[in-house]
Amino acid sequence: MQTKLTQLLNIKHPIIMAPMFLVSNTAMVKEAMNSGIAGCIPALNYRTLPELKAAIQELKAAKVEGGSFGFNLIVNKSNPKYREQLRVLCEEGCDFIITSLGSPEETIIQAHKAGIKVFCDVTDLKFAQKVESLGGDALIAVNNEAGGHRGNFSPKELIQLLKKNCSIPVISAGGVGRKADIDEMLGYGADGVSVGSPFIASVEANVTDEYKQACVDYGAKDIVMTQRISGTPCTVINTPYVQKIGTKESWLESMLNKHKKLKKWVKMIRFSIGMRATEKAAKEATYKTVWVAGPSIEYTKEILPTKEIISKLTHS
Image (cartoon, rainbow, N blue to C red):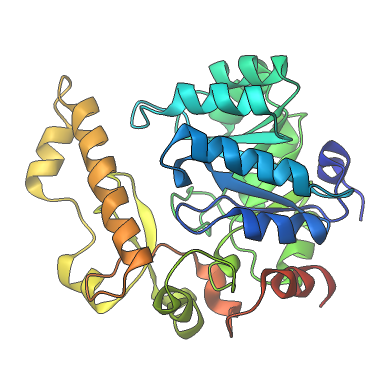
């Protein structure tokens, strides 16, 4: 199927394997490229710049015709590694960068100099129009069915709002767990989709079997929003531990977040603590379990190789 996204990235199917903190890796992206879709990894999945550089070089060596790879950058002040990560991506080269949680202006300028396309996470029309005015190549329309940090609009509302008012491609993110969902998003006018949660339960994912099995055992009704990870509302599986600690920020966190001078530092600290907690849950089997996922795990029935998950999304 040809869409603006397949043309933009020279891929066979209008699908991006979404970047997922701690989950995504080069093995998954290689399978994505071999299956004719694009794959993306958070730059923060690599602790050091040499590790990030090695991952880029590995994917460049493995790239096939009809496949495409990129990296995700957190572009706000909670990520002190942002500028150095951007520099390495531009020096080494990749097909695209997805920006999240901040202004993409600097990324767009530097990436375009290096011939790299920039797609930007957006949750509303105001930011989407800002992205277009800055020269972004496509919009990642994060809806209210997305995993992790989600938006407020339904997939249909957000796709149609952006298609009506913006001229660059719209890639819908959230609510896709099967081929029928992809067809539905394209029917609303999307130029492609970004799919994340179904790939958590892949053989290649860098997380515990317990995390993968949770995506099999739990469903859409078990996804809740929490403010206890990064300070920004985030979707997680409603495990007994999540129920125990609650999903609302504490009164102290709430008070500090309202303090103009302290707000930035509180967010940085909260982000750092939350990421460490999420990493521990993803890498270790522990009762203190906070597993990030979206409602599209409803259709995850078994742990499968990445290529089989892609085949189900494209052929069944």
